[in-house]
Length: 230
Image (cartoon, rainbow, N blue to C red; front, side, top):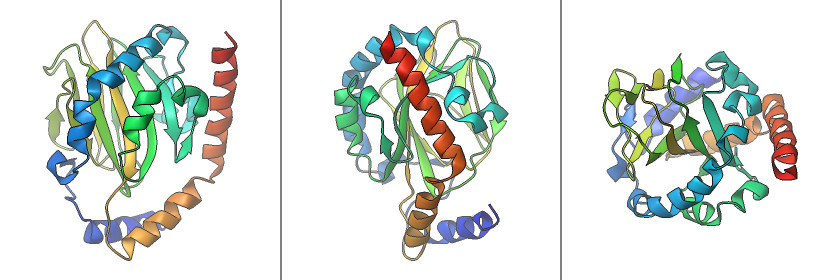
């Protein structure tokens, strides 16, 4: 944690893309194909949603998330976590997993489900070496009732449209509608020039071995045993 401010400054100097809170998706040539495939992903999501009430709260997997959410309003279905594929889950969504292979530097991907009334309080991610993608899959309302604020900007999800942002900026999200909101959520490595790309690679590999990640892997395994046991 002590070296993160230095590394973040290095990343900003060496970034191949904008350092803005919300980035132009045109800077990522793989996005159009991802958007074209959104209905294929949606078909697999719909199968997962038939057991929505059995999905874990995200804080049940990654305990640090309890700092910003403690209820059952933010559910997740993980496909890959910090570069480690979850094969029992990817077998449920083979086409989604195939499509995600086109995301360079993919680190984490999941279906992120907001129940009606969910408000994720303002917070910031710990590190700008990753960028975040949200691909709208189930968006019940495109007004301010269902939205995300990133820095000073309020953005709205749309089905089949990607949003890319830097989660190290303060952000919050909410679903004030009466239906669920679901996005395909993916973290991927920020495109960087040397030497930041090497430092970023080393730091991310170190984080992947951290105790809180090992705890999350254990929580995920325990949930899978119960879910697939049924």
